[in-house]
Length: 382
Ligand code: 1CP
Image (cartoon, rainbow, N blue to C red; front, side, top):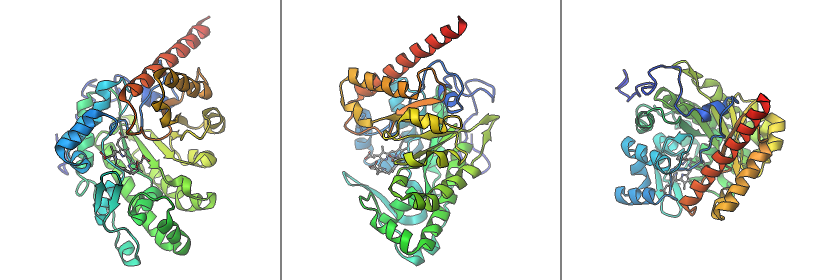
């Protein structure tokens, strides 16, 4: 089905027939809202990616990463790959945060083993003044279409997450032109020409917002903002150049779709010092990197937001028994009986992770949390 703008639209809640029911497994959405669940839901950042041999084979066949995410049917196929292997509690649309600057005309390419590169990084004032907000249903049409095709294919099995980069993280890639170790260009601009930095952030915030809302309109049931570079800032700079722009996105998000609230998650890598201010932006949930202790985070902000995280992704290199033991530690750190935890890694799955180890993690989180939650229930009945 296509709407008046010609975009693909999911047949809403086709599986249930009612608009109020979320998904047959709604543990992920319930946990985001700090409601009771029978188990702790789990999904992993970058769950659909290079550690899966079927992903590598498809990318090889198709020729590039961009050909995958620009084709809604292939993007859907990739998003479903990890779910075919593991009983994960959420799916995430297969795309990249850098599609927004690409649609702004910066010329994105992905160079093998070097990561993303922009042909025209933003360095001069004229280019910055000309920056514009791309129409998500025009230049980025493949993204809302991928959301709608994936939502349809999930058929109500688990919820679908949409995402974007935070304005500051987008600005880092746009100014640096790719991955950076020292953030030299972006920090030079931020301190020397804060007016230009604010101009980029202003456009990036509007672009991220329209892009997230397009994903919600197309069927995303939760959205996540990745501030993967936020942690490189001083506290003062974070308060000036990252936080207000993330807040602006959260304030503009579509809050409810078909009678169901749409929760938002904010991930600030290296943001452990600022949890209170991030929680005050209005997000439903904070995603934490592995440096932050979950129990401490819960004491600081757990009454306001749910938490997502935060196993060190490199634990997945260890043997399955060690993975299970480390996962239990994460759950225990949060508070075994508690509501409001979505299990995840503290950052994306490494491409060198053996897929069976991801299976062992998902199994351990489900098994251990089910045991703890049923013990709590029978304790309450007594
Ligand atoms: O096949 C390939 O070589 C492409 C590898 C790849 C993949 C699978 C890239 C390149 N991006 C992605 C997908 C992707 N990116 C998803 C898909 C959904 C999922 O989680 O399964 C998401 C959510 C992202 C988000 C993203 N891209 C972030 C934010 C999260 C994070 O990891 O901090 C960032 C910073 C990027 C930039 C990016 N894209 C790709 C690379 C190599 C990079 C540079 C950063 C890095 O090395 O991870």
